[in-house]
Image 1 (spheres, rainbow, N blue to C red):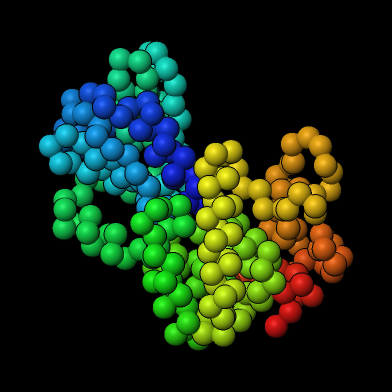
Image 2: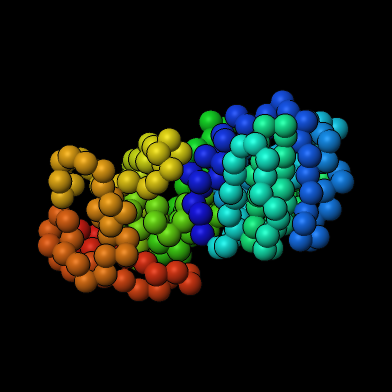
Amino acid sequence: MPEGHTLHRLAREHRKVFGGQVVHAESPQGRFDPASIDGHTLHRAEAVGKHLFHHYSGGQVLHIHLGLFGKFTAGTGEPPDPRGALRLRLTTEDAWTDLRGPTACEMVDPLQLTALLARLGPDPLRADAEPDRAFHRISRSSTAIGALLMDQKVVAGIGNVYRAEILFRHGVNPFRAGKLLDRGTWDAMWEDLVVLMKAGVRSGRIVTVRPEDRPRKRGALSRAEAVYVYRRTGLPCRLCGTPVATEVMVGRNLFWCPRCQAV
């Protein structure tokens, strides 16, 4: 599932391409009614966690959640003939974008929007984020920190990669109860998430390995070289050489170093 930086990157692209433009909308698949936004101006596009919102003239708000299979494609000029399960197509005179396979593509009214946002924890990529809200939940919970970080009510936007990598970078055992995480460690983790996820928005990829720990000093890193533990089961830890361990936690594979992240 795309993590928060992907949605913020999409919001940035949509602001650049469609912001201030009259947008025409259609749903070749027929599973979305585009009438309420067709011919309206996109005032703002924003992301909160893994959710994308388009705000249109007239107050209409389009909510999109990509889920596991959702994907946008985009281009300029004349769009191609619709193919496959095309949920939503947005076009202007100069550009287009197609959305396929989302978990949610729906219009929300003000009450629904407020309720949806109220269910989300702070987003490290938003200037209005309040990390204290997340720590309030974490510090009162006996649930493992590795599970809490995947709970979008605790922190919005973190997925499986950032979960594994932020815990490794701060030497936190993923099975440690949230209430045993001290405030100083949480503050450092939050600040690190802000930096890492902002870099993800800029580059479109997740890179968590510090320069001094990288296998080579020049050239672009491969996906496998860009992380410490994610999907590196059985391979030597980049810092201590201990084989990376894995276990399923909250339905997703968790990766960690038993030595660097000892209990």
